[in-house]
Image (cartoon, rainbow, N blue to C red; front, side, top):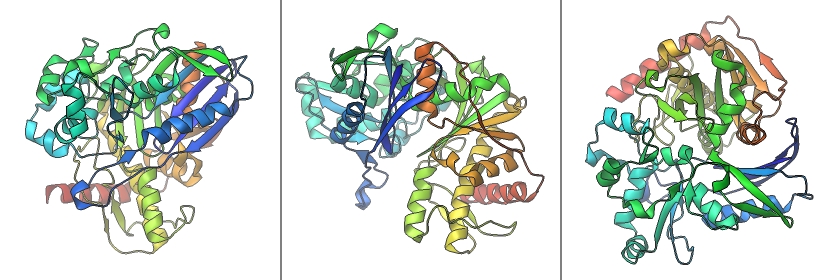
Length: 459
């Protein structure tokens, strides 16, 4: 069997897959998120490194028999990182989430050329990626500056910290997929980018080495058994692997805390400028669009409205709209400080429906950005927490006017990692099909929404 540790924004999971692709064990442990209310900390999103490690250890402890486990993978939320002491392993910062935008002002002051950053990293310069927040920590956190002066500072993506804490080898390495999300990794050179390190003021020696090959990552101890870690990657990267079994005519959506849409390509240079050239762990590429305010936006609004997330009213052509800036606008707009707002009036149920609809609208806007690359797409595979809502899946089908498939195994990140461990990308996958309806209302509402959003951005 194959073990996958999946550490996401809302929970940690341990999943066991058989060599035929059956999910035979899944244990999930929630993890909390802190969003300080102090106005001087607007945009801050943090998690406890201690809680994350404890949650993973708890999940591992629920595995009854590890004797059949051949190898393990670790997949993590991307762009989240922390600083810690080299000598003691003591965290010097919380885990600073990918949702955190505290580095936006610093990033703006650097006035980087987006085209040059894109050429080097495959990404659009944005405060959600690690570099500006790493630079902020070096400037603003005294304990980080002290550790740097003493030669005892480590700064790395969350995956590196988890490896150090859970494996026997205590390695200080990062995979290419997570390294890319720091905005400091040169995808052509497959190394840290000297120019960008200098631009952000990040010393190269505080960053991990780039790990390559299955032998790099060390071993977990699971119920007394020594299990090799043969894969480390970002959670969305492996989700794209699991959902992309349909080939070049299948686009994929993974919608959880954030929502992500990917269109496969063999030519990364053909990916439009305002989308991301996302590296896949099997050496392929995805044209990726990202939506920051997905599950988090729905949960936040449901709490504010005191309305259950399953109590969503249908919307008519002229009903209210929601401009979704939760966590900032990502692709293709890339504006970190956009303020969410409703356009029009409606009930609590209608407002919640408009928030869910806005996620679909943002995904569709990213899909439109793919241009010629997306013209051959015939179907979408949808996974993640939001895919459990049939209404969400049907909304995607109706707006995109394409068949939507919801695989029975919705743990796409873990399934994709297990596929890579097993060397098998063709595990059988049954699912539920959603056929597009011919109703014009979704497109009419999208047109209204897009005009309102662009007016707000230009105002």
